[in-house]
Length: 343
Image (cartoon, rainbow, N blue to C red; front, top):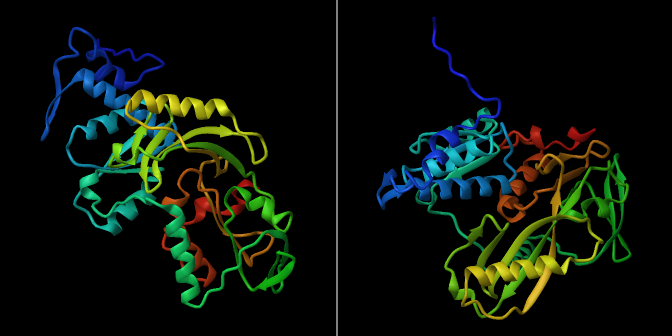
């Protein structure tokens, strides 16, 4: 008679390969060795949980794929098993391939998240002053022939025949094509001038510690607390949490207190708080942005809904929008981001 294996209905391989070894009896045993030394099952289990929290916060859901381009440090098993623990599917790939190979694998696997070891991505960087960066981009636009108008858009007229018109500061401006990139305010700016999309906001809270910027030398994620601490030109900024509250609801002071309390618990030497504020992340139900032409008015190109990753994805979004505007084939398949996917 053939042997049978009973697999429980709710089975997660991480429990068998990691968690059951992390107890008092075997938790001190070596589970993994890399160039930095030995890692016990207890330490690895904690890193697996940390990686799983981070991936969940990125929006990775059960049965979705995650591409892994990672070296053989301890973070490889931590991320691999962290994905499995939340029900996702890790897809490890060779670290010696070309950009074209990785682009193909991302599209072919339908991976929603890409995890790359820091040593393989030497050109990664952080922005210390987003306002200054934006100002320089505006200056460059004006110096190369662009025109910058600062004001409130009070009306938008979708004219499918000859373009799009906006009323800014009471004056009407007409364009053959326009890009709607107003973040969480995009539907409010449009005001019926295009199809309605299910845009909401993930409200995030910010706490600035102006005298504590030197405490960290890089962004640090507080996975179980739901926020990041980032050294900025203005000091140490702690920002995060998620609150689906729209554009008009009053801020929740308890969230600001929570962030400050958790930061002081992690960094006892942190200084006083100078500023707090609330930000609005543009959010869509499927966690993907909208990039493409309006179905109601093809002269209007949508580019919003990037959730937590607007600055990170701004460059590639701008490239795709430019290609769409001139009728070129986009560098990436934009089908998943099409505006009519909600209709």
